[in-house]
Image (cartoon, rainbow, N blue to C red; front, side, top):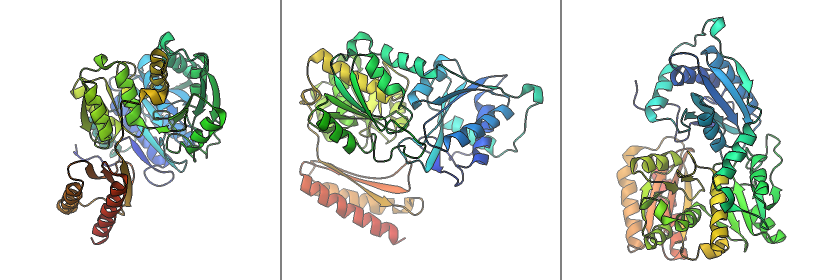
Length: 447
């Protein structure tokens, strides 16, 4: 078995629809290969859920055909947030779950990601085993052994009740006015119902998917529209999810955007004693979070960027809470994976139990100015450049005088280098980030 993954990235297999490998023939074979690896030793079942992008219909059918050819039964969930698919995979005792989604990307992209029967992401060695199976000719089981497919008609209701059960009466939302931005994505039906059934007055935006508008100027990656609506309506809180419902960005009553680092702090400060002494962030987590957690008596461990790596570190260090500034928040005391709706419920619970609004809850955390600049990569990052990159980073960090950070890393999902600079002075941070990004662009272009 090879040790390097050919198709799987940090979050499944993702790319432009119609461009290999995000094609119906490849996805059909992927379903077959996954069925053979994930369902061994007799008949089993795999769940398939998706977001709202138009290509989901095509890839759902392709996966269904491949799994059936491998002798695996299929349970079709329809549009449902990624964390809901993880939950139902476990609760319905399926052998695995498959999500058809490109998360926060536009409709032109799509992807396939997997959960184990326990609702967890696949280990690297399992992804490698699937890739090894993909190299073999596709064969079909005997006709009598072909997999059957059926729809799970109450999938959305099951997930709604699960979300509500995570906070019980502690997140009574009676009297709260919420604006919920569903990103025209997988949570467009379930998220509003969760908050309404807990007593909130809910105004929805971006909740009319047409297959092409997912994440289009809305949701967790573009919260400005939510900000305007919160200010216009006088709402108590704005809640922005991404296309597959596992990210959360908030807007407070004053129109300030609240990111994943701040959400982590609010959740951690509500009950520090439940977190085994530390929280897991990433290389990109703000220094302000680290210092605020320290005042709570909590450490911050930094994982590689990507929620799969946050999860790995949580498990390795036996911790409970972790996340990313992008809005992925994982609380293993409540759920198996990152969940935007459940994260929002935790914040609402903190507001209710403390009697404070969100801005008051964040008084103990002051974020450092941070600037992120993307540098286009036209090919894989050349590791031979690493020593020169290290020299550039070291010089930039020296100029911050020990009061900030500089990070350069390849994106795990896009052909980009991420250049991040963080420090105490906004002007210096912005200038240094643009300077380092320019030097990186020149260095790459010179190869």
